[in-house]
Image 1 (cartoon, rainbow, N blue to C red):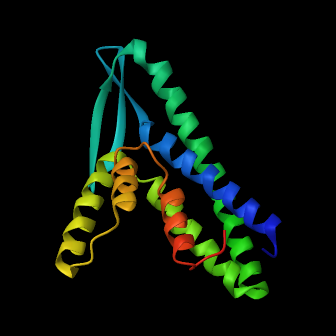
Image 2 (cartoon, one colour):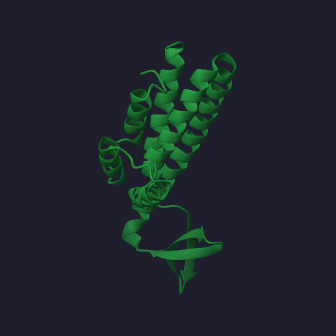
Image 3 (tube, rainbow, N blue to C red):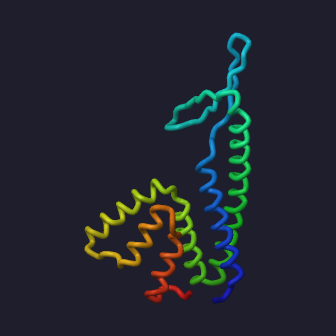
Length: 174
């Protein structure tokens, strides 16, 4: 394949992005506010949800841990912005260089998004997919069904299974 280095770099950045998204999804979000009541300070984790501000009391012994999580989240979100910029630059360059490679980039990006989906959402996604294929009357092969089931439970990469299927039907070169 032409431009292997670009493909490898893009794949690496997507993998890094996916890892960060998984970690961030488990970290606290919001900011810490302080209220002084009768001379004593109380700390609250504040965040927006559904357009409303939610407030959660922070016990004194949990304050350092929550501060560290919020700091780590901020650092990773800043790193994600840099990764996004690099991905966009690579996509723009490849779009000009090679249309087939650009198509592979988009396939990788979609697979990466599937792999960074939380496990709870994966199961719902798989149920929807199964309902759609039942309506269309085109069942997936046994290997594909097994791979999707493993992906939904977080044990298998969507990218690996999807690229195998595309290669099996000669839709991409491996």
